[in-house]
Image (tube, rainbow, N blue to C red; front, side, top):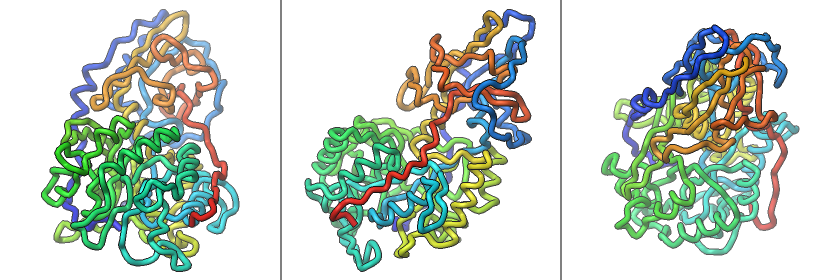
Length: 481
Ligand SMILES: [Zn+2]
């Protein structure tokens, strides 16, 4: 499903430490005599959630945690929203996707209805998609000898005629799709050939913009015919086929793709680490543009020749989401982006029993309050915010005020965050009822404030995470398989 010849490249987190110490600001002293611990910024503060002895909390009351009557002391940030110990997203590539398979998978993972795979799991999972289908690989894409030409894509083939455009548009809007798996499946049997042309990228961006389809995540795809890939150019000679960011190439498109809104790029590089303290790294493209690269868990290890042992198909899902891996994430308080190809099987039921069981195990970790399972775009945005948020604390009139000032994003630029960019931020405080979260000097709406009882370290106050949405958004469309 993926290009097989990848070097072993160990994930390295680049360049975050220098920035962290620079942006801490001192809070003013509280009015009462209690001396507050000075709040600093981000991961460097090593909020107690970074310690290993934090017990799993039960889900707290949403508001109205007991007011101690005391002026609060703000201690710092909790790494992940209460009560979770880790955060995980499933990032599934659109290879061999059909609408039939897509709907089956999403009804099972996203909803809580009865489905052919059993009771739905109620997890926040968003998929990826293709704009075009330019493959000539043999074989079938689905049951009933469905040809590869019916692989799910926005346009028909490499034309300007819509194929699944309206249903893909629908799924982007409701949150079941958040990732562009390159502009299309351009894999050819002869890898020296391709149907990709620069004009196709322009047509795709125009269509996405016209429909209000905002996509922030890009994942590279396929064999060397997929010349619109661009994340790993220059990493080694093999990647020289990746022409998407080379201004001198006839396949150059990042002059449109990055300004359109792609912020996060998976660069076709393997990783055998289930979790990391941070999964993002600065990536400068050949044309000088800056994006965030990110790591996905793609393989269990490497053989003696350094070739990745891929485990990113449903057949191996149970080895990815095994109890040891999940418990390690929780123990180390890590992020995980699990790469998959959930529509990659020829099964009528799409997911085999071991894959279903693995997803059930993950759902238990989520519903029991240990791993926050969310869509890739939300995990990556939270990773940026948690790592680079700048805030200070003032005390006045028996209350504490947490002023969120900026996201000091070293790649895309420092900026005052929107509400959605600070979703989930959680601050330890001795008295949540008297601790106010503000953007600058403006309190966030009460409806978005969440007070949490102690998780064994401290109580906390938070900007609410995104609301749970288990709506069944599945749609069929005449002529789309
Ligand atoms: Zn792919």
